[in-house]
Length: 54
Image 1 (cartoon, one colour):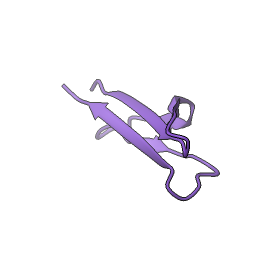
Image 2 (tube, one colour):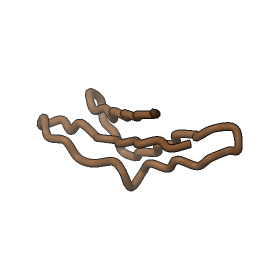
Image 3 (cartoon, one colour):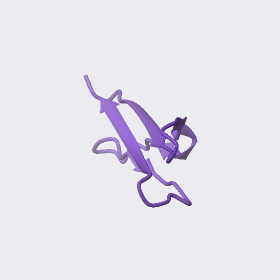
């Protein structure tokens, strides 16, 4: 199964930073598991994960 996934961290100053290095997409045999780990997020910061499965 193919899955395209992206992750973006929204910073406090309004800029965006890729979070792809924190993203993994292991296949557990029944499907793909989307796993994202981020450290040191502050209040009002967010991470957006988007995926597209055909």
